Length: 462
Ligand SMILES: Nc1nc2c(ncn2[C@@H]2O[C@H](COP(=O)(O)OP(=O)(O)OP(=O)(O)O)[C@@H](O)[C@H]2O)c(=O)[nH]1
Ligand SMILES: [Mg+2]
Image 1 (cartoon, protein in one colour):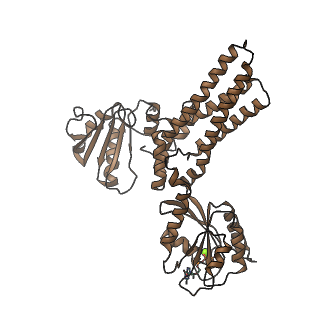
Image 2 (cartoon, helix red, strand yellow):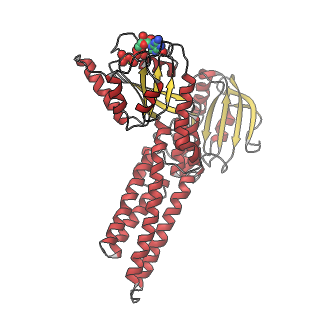
Image 3 (tube, rainbow, N blue to C red):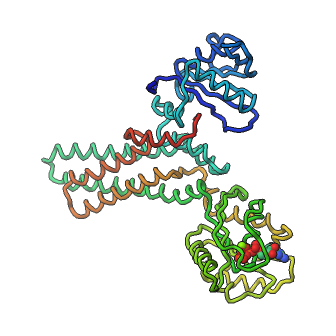
């Protein structure tokens, strides 16, 4: 059977596994008749739209009851896909859910491709491309906070902004056309290039502003790359385990236990962290440990945030001092660990050494100071950006970021072309490119392959 956009499609829309309820979503012209064949309860053809109806799913071949269900009837066009949508809410676990889906499929629907519901929403004009991608981000959002960003995008904040910029460019291009058509005025060439310059500068500033938010947006999606750094045996792996609430990394009292970098995702007070446990940094002749130490040094360079661990039961060593210097350039928090043991470090000396960076005292062994650490991370992160920027449009999607960078360089071309005194119609080409690229973000100008590629990344049932 050849798949078409007209087929009625169905899929399980809730995560696979044991949940309280599962939802089977059916969309298309035949959604109602198909489900009607399996439903014992009210006549679905007669119920009002956007109602939920109690009844049973029955296998027509043997009249056997499969599950007790609630069926939502949503008639086009006020639906997610703009087609007739029926959602069967059942509660019989995986087995019943699958059987209902099978029945729906044998009575006239076909299994939806991943992302096909959202693709239809897009094709039928309900969502634009950046909103459709926001749905995808929403599905993948790791914490509540990144959910907020995805939701904003879903509202179309980004789309609105992009469309406005496109309109601005279009206006100036139209004006350029008019001016070119009336070359009898003396100063026309100069006027036109002046206009182009102003507009290109303005749009470029907005685009650069958007790209600045991308750094933070990325953090929300992928987690803040947080490297736990310190000399051997200070408690780095213990910290990773404590934050994860899980014995993930090996902890022993042998210095040099961790040999390789371990990465784990964890949500600390609303901040998604990609925690990186590293090998303790010291001079060593051991071949394997040497490689580990090298990787730790690399982690210092690439991390967004460093948790520098120091064992306060021992005097600051040469290695500690080296690490304090090596981590200076990256946002850093210092953790003075093992407070359950007698102290061998003067807090105020350390404070001057670390240039006033926050110092948190912990005993990971006795689980003290952990809450303070979480709060400090969250405070550091949100108060220096995200919290105050919640209402700002953010770019979080890799494809959008890529396109915006291209827009930025097309506009740079426009400006340097004008500086070099190139004819206006040449400069116009780069301006048009910028307009097209912006359109690719919202899907106002798009290619078919791009669409297929995008929607294939969705989960089944969305
Ligand atoms: N007394 C005390 N011991 C701790 C504390 N935190 C960790 N330790 C102990 O310190 C030792 C080393 O801990 P690890 O977490 O393996 O240290 P590490 O920094 O990962 O060490 P390497 O992987 O060798 O670099 C273990 O015996 C831990 O139980 C603490 O707060 N107090
Ligand atoms: Mg370790």
